[in-house]
Amino acid sequence: MNLTSEEKEMLSGKQGKAVKKSMEILVALGEIYGAKRMVEAKSVQIAGVSYHNLGDAGLEFLEEMGQDGKVKVLTTLNPAGMDLEEWQKLGIDSGFAEKQMKVIDAFSRMGVTITCTCTPYLIGNLPRFGEHIAWSESSAVCFANSVIGAITNREGGPSSIASALTGKTPEYGMHLEKNRQAQVRVLVKAKIDSVPKFGAMGRVIGEKIGNKIPLIEGIQSASLEELKSLSAAIATYGGTAMFHMKGITPAKTAVPKKSISIGEKDIAEALGKFDCAEEIDFVGIGCPHASINEMQKIAELLKGKKVKKEVWVCTARQTKQLADKMGYSKAIEDAGAKIACDTCMAVAPIKGRFKGMITDSAKACYYAAGHNGIKTRIRTVEECVEEAMK
Amino acid sequence: MKLKGRTIYAGKAEGEALVSKDPLSFYGGVDLEKGIVVEKGHCLEGKSIAGKVLVFPNGKGSTVGSYAIYRLKKAGKAPAAIVNKECETIVAVGAIISEIPCVDRIDIAKIKDCVKVKVDAGKGEVEI
Image (cartoon, rainbow over all chains, first blue to last red; front, side, top):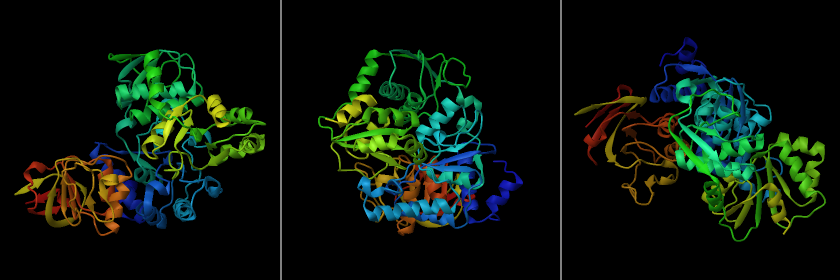
């Protein structure tokens, strides 16, 4: 790779050990994937925050990097393994909480903005169209590339930290315009009009075309929440970093020759595959984290009612603070539901605690089944709330 | 015989080769306290990777695998060096943060199990 004098200095160790290690990571990745140079990364989102996933080794690495590493650009965090303030209410044990706080302390020392959300774009880490960034968290990567039109590869935990501490990312993959073009045309001949259906469509497309970039046609309208759900599902089930949606997403693309169709039958089949739970004892909403719009809706549905099951509404702390102010949090909590900030059902250590989960999220279904052995059912948020009261 | 490849992380190491024809997942596929491959049906299942020159085509699985390599190193159970056919993000980042000599683009079919090999990763060389 061609490095600037500044980048060479970082690699030499003159800017400290953490910067040296970071540059070594970025140069190695650049060499492996054929990058010619580094580009400036204007924003970073770090995944690998839950102690559940990091373990002691990850924690030790973060503490080492935190000794002399400081972030050079706006950097936010993915969900942690617990609510950082009210972890007891979610049934987290104190040993786990202590380790999780050490992880957060290490990030704080690096100057990371402690947010702990998979939707950084909803709470102030919002890159602009065409801006190079280095994000991990597959749903946020897909949302950023597709809906916002910012430019990022699917980074891992360590490589996103490396970009945060250097402000650089190697120019390969999604950073090159030729790799951002649609590869398969997806003609949707089904009515996609709810969050679960957008999730199911994401699963169908992901399973059919894998990590290729689709140009989705036939969708008349899509809300922020629906696009957030689609981004999560298509990345989870297929591994793509981006999609185009005709009339909805901002980036230009040529129309690919190869095309596939998706009909009502495909969507119904996908919805059916999520439905394997006979008994529901857990209601999980907010994957990806609930927007303020969703918080308002849930509050309206729960106002003056009582839930009979364990209900988690997962959201960013900043969104909850606004919900507190608006009275939404009170309505939700008075009904007996829990608002879980900084975390979610995919990264919290909930294995063995629940048998069946109802959710509006396709991604939550994948992680509940895979990581935590929980059976799932997918419905609209209205139906989830109804089930909670049974 | 000298095989020539590409530097992923510089450093020198010497040891017995442990050769896998299957890709390897460090997160979930290896017992991180004991350094033993535990993935069911893997051609190295039950074998210790500690102190070996670990030869495999490429990494697979979760990106948390990089931290798993680091944990092996801290437990004293890491391989002495890593030799890949085609290195990818997980193994490359794991080798760098754990400071394990690592080379790739090596014709790994030429390396036989249990032979003594010398790795000079800085030069991208594996000597059998």
